[in-house]
Length: 95
Image (cartoon, rainbow, N blue to C red; front, side, top):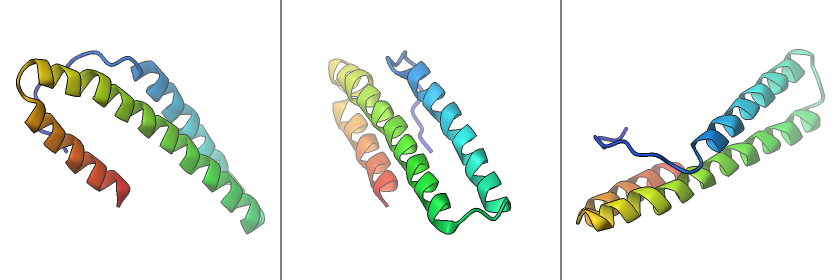
């Protein structure tokens, strides 16, 4: 998806990984609800919770990007390139 060749630490890496692990468990639970024939309203409530969990992880990734990637790119004279990558990522995410 990205052709970024650099790696650097991000403040929220563990929090994002933990959030996604919890979300994966939640998705598995929702799948079991569907297989068990639970009411659609109950399933939809849980799917809304899954979406919110993904949104929380996304916000952390965005926060890291702004704090680490954009700040680093600005100090290296590559802010325009990083802004373009951010715009592309946001366009994809918002679709």
